[in-house]
Length: 188
Image (cartoon, rainbow, N blue to C red; front, side, top):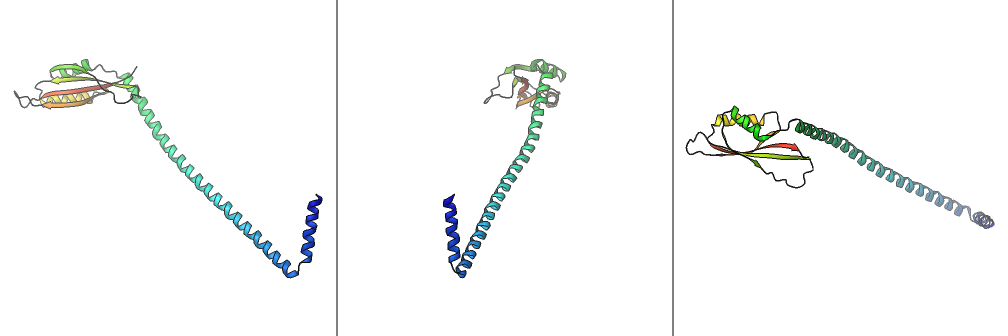
């Protein structure tokens, strides 16, 4: 402590010995340096504040995007749950279903065979596709249109996945048909 007091005394002694003009110059220099330090300090603090506000704005924008995506995600989750519930309720055995519809529209199915469905990639949905390939010979176009419409709009999860019409040389108004009909079931 004595060293500090000794240095303060020597500083006071120095200031008393210098001329009034030098004392004024020293005061101006000290005041200028103080103002400069305050100015630079406030600039630094304002710059940091602005950068923090910009960072906060970016985070707020991302939060708004997350909230928007959350709504879309919830909607997609509800759709998946609705689809799974519909699949549980509307389990369709394709062969009897198609046989019954073909009789209703007076169409003779010449061949009906289960079709293997290739799964590309990993099936993470828990839903698998079952398919049946049917072949029809000499089908009137009006009956075919009604038959296919009844399949698609049956209220069940059944879709015409492939359809190929070939000309029938014995009756050009009645083509031969090759179709793949699919339904979807929950993978157990």
